[in-house]
Amino acid sequence: MIDETTPENTIVYHSTQSGKDWSVNVRVVEKQGRARVIEYRASDGLHRCILPANVVREALAGDGLTEEELERGVSYGEDWAEMLHGVEMPTPETVAQVLRDAGIWTAEEARANVGATRAAIARVYAPVTTAILRGSRAIQKGRR
Image 1 (tube, rainbow, N blue to C red):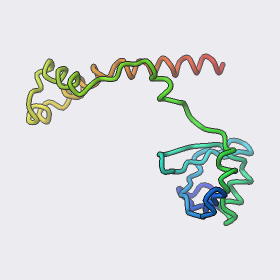
Image 2 (cartoon, rainbow, N blue to C red):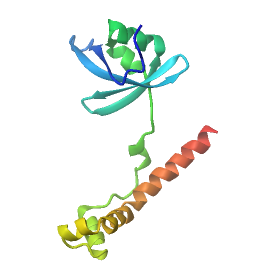
Image 3 (cartoon, rainbow, N blue to C red):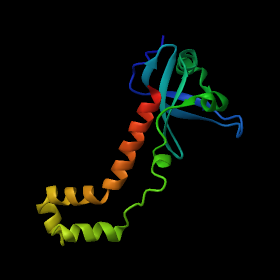
Image 4 (tube, rainbow, N blue to C red):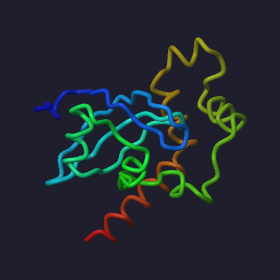
């Protein structure tokens, strides 16, 4: 029997569109009853989805995953990008000005005053942090 608690397992992924097989490193990150949350890296970044435990066990045992099985997985996690729609992102110029306002004008000053540098950057990104936390609270309230 395959040990699902192994940090990373390689699963063969079968693409029906291209007809090619390739390996995907998959990590079982959580067990949810008869389902598993798996994590894998695709060409567009890191993904998590929920699949039936038997599908994951069979894939780990050597049967692999088909494209359809992976696409049928339920997406796991929040849509952070959607949560940030409408939030004005700081420009490099804004970050530079906030650093100057904090008295950070040179690389040496940034290295010598790490706390002040981090605080200045946190201030400029505060609207982003606020949007994520507000969105997270709204999601949590909706799940109750």
